[in-house]
Length: 116
Length: 111
Image (cartoon, rainbow over all chains, first blue to last red; front, side, top):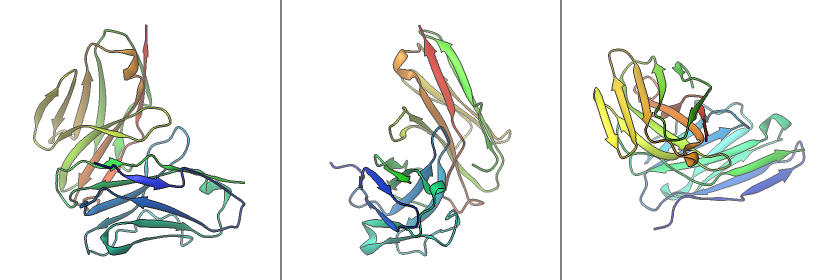
């Protein structure tokens, strides 16, 4: 079946503009994660959705970042007033279950964001 | 990731065996995952350990010691295509049961 998809694959924006990044998880997956990865760095956790529970937003770096997950499926990560330090690859992952389960995460191909 | 440590880089020879270590400190441990990430690609799942011991899957094995907060990924019969970053990730109640990743170990396989 289809894997996790993300759009756009690449986004170049000017400093100060808002951007929206989209993630379509695998159908039926209840857990959805957003990560950020700068060049040559590890994965930085941003936000985690699990079913109907309140999202874990503890990784969002500032109030310019927000995310929604509509209908328990598609998620949108919004970055307002983008800064150059926001340039990175934004990865989305979904999983059949969250919490303490052993399910692995399936990653999308990522969106490469460049802020000029 | 917080309190998850891995070596930054390792180099090994084609056909050899390499062990990539990961140490962690957390409370309410609920599992450790290893992922492989080739340059420019998304991470892909390799292994999961929650109980002490060794899990073997083909050329790859992963070991966990909960009491020591220690895991390793063992790669046998190295191939050039194994050159990648290897990410250790921990799930625990302390982290709200979300997956927290280490910085990754870049493995370079030379001929």
